[in-house]
Length: 207
Ligand SMILES: [Zn+2]
Image 1 (tube, rainbow, N blue to C red):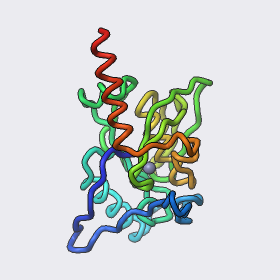
Image 2: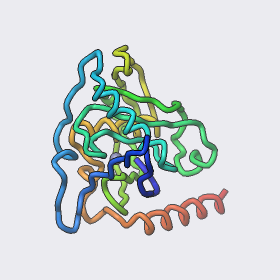
Image 3: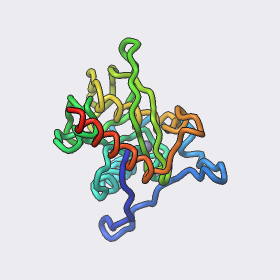
């Protein structure tokens, strides 16, 4: 998930891969973004570890990037990286940002919703250029994943953290946030930010 876009930089002298992106006007979606990625087995191969490092480097170079999944840079493997550190500014935009997590790399991640409650909030994605939309997601999820050393990680997440996890895990299953958004409700990201800022201002004025 993201709110800004930026260009590629170098990793060990090699250019980082660019993003696989959907072209909505031409209705073209790269296969790597729309099919389930390969599960990894442990111990990871040197190639897997290299792919993880490339994904992490790509994530690190982005400002305001909550998460990335390997298919987004053309690597069809079940790897995601995300971060949700406590951030006062972010909490203003995301009132349900109540649970935090430092930078995390997960292999073969999955989630399931807990309970019926779903919430709507906006999302954007490096794989869907310049568009944003409102997506209904589980407020609480149970997740499982593996660390790079093959240790099982399990837990529960809620609010915005749960949203990031759902968005990124969906990527390794070939699902994009726009799959949840009716076409006529997708917006240009600039318009979305304007609308969002106006709503926030109006909210503050009524307090
Ligand atoms: Zn995304």
